[in-house]
Image (cartoon, rainbow, N blue to C red; front, side, top):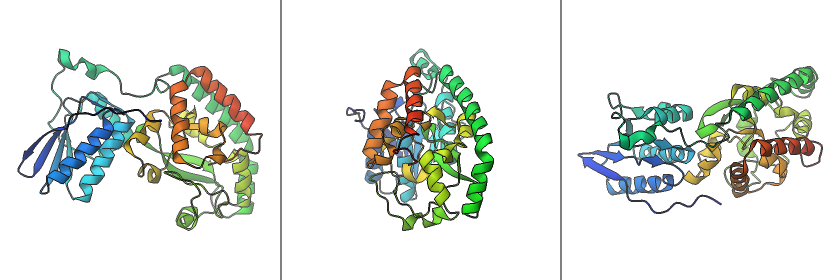
Length: 333
């Protein structure tokens, strides 16, 4: 199901006193990322007296979501041992990836470590990030803008009756927002019509998770209100997400946006699903999302979408989504 990763040589590293300098590979993608995490762990286990790790990106020119995942996993391992991790020599492309994924807030970037000038052997540095081709499609983005404007128009029309129903059924705000993770793990606020009690997040630990892996679902979640069940059944609770689509946080069609709690459970290869923008709908929506019970099935659907993506495929999924909304299998994850 996942991309195979062939064996890679150990990370080039230099130990000076209690500081370990690690040379990050030229590419840190789905192929190299699992080995990077493994070798990083081995280096930390080997050097028991470490106080500081420097990640030298002077040769690194390409990075994808799996690379981001490997870096976060490595940072977590170092923090568990109170080892300081700093970053050197980010070129513009890798620095953009750091900014997109919010890594600039997690890693310490030491100043005066700009990468060396581009040489003929480093022309690859001018290539874009290893994002999926759907992310680079201006036509897909134009379709998202048009579709979101239409969706927001529908939301405006339905807002008052939905708001009244929510207020009459359960005290609290009309809208609900939650942090989700998008392209390359970038965090954003997702908006929905509130379908649960106001203290739902604090009650989550009391509700059994009926699925396996890094996501949460309970078919009879007691936190959902009566109106909320109707909103979820009809997917009306998701109408405010057209605002997320208009902003570019999401797309009309993509993958399911995970929570930070979910991605904290990810293996490095699971980050592949974040190579595309999350979607208001997608494979998981039209293929029985109410029946998905394993995270492996989520990954299978996500990778199937990435492999088969085209503008026509998106249109096909949009039409299927409309059809699903009128069947008994519709409803939120």
